[in-house]
Image (cartoon, rainbow, N blue to C red):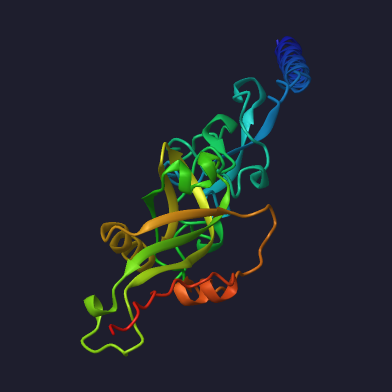
Length: 265
């Protein structure tokens, strides 16, 4: 009886060992098979320039307005930019929201649109620098006959000249005996960029003081004329203005004299 019990115990032990071996082999095979599963291929991406903050229309793009993120290659808009330098300095034609891709169709080079603040007046955050002039965009009306025959277009650079009928007694309590009413002409602004044009109305940029002075002159009936500059002509005119005596002397115009009647006899 004892020999039978020993045999049964030995048989149970052998079966247990075999089951443990089979379990270990199964675990190894399963783990090996799981480790051999191929990982899903990486989704291809591409860099896309997006707005780092809200960018209003008619805004000059600065570096602080932009950031670059990775887009799935299949979802990238066709006209989206990949490099920030392709957008910096350009002008938005429509607003661009935070995170929205910057498209070429929403930018121009400033010739077909305009901005109030030029790029060199803006800080890295897109706001005006502390020392930037108080720029404003405003319009002046200049008939074609006084605007190079109507040939001035946006992007051109002009000088603004005024012509007024000046009467010293209107502005001064005391005048010199030699002062008299006459026409006076002067170039008052140089290197003015034409931002936009609708007919005889031209949009230009200047600081607030300049805007007030030109508004006064036009309100007073002063005639404005535009002098078109050649491209890359940055020279200052440095003129002193013209009035009757100077013009007459320069061009040697004969001054009419009264004919004295003969003395009565």
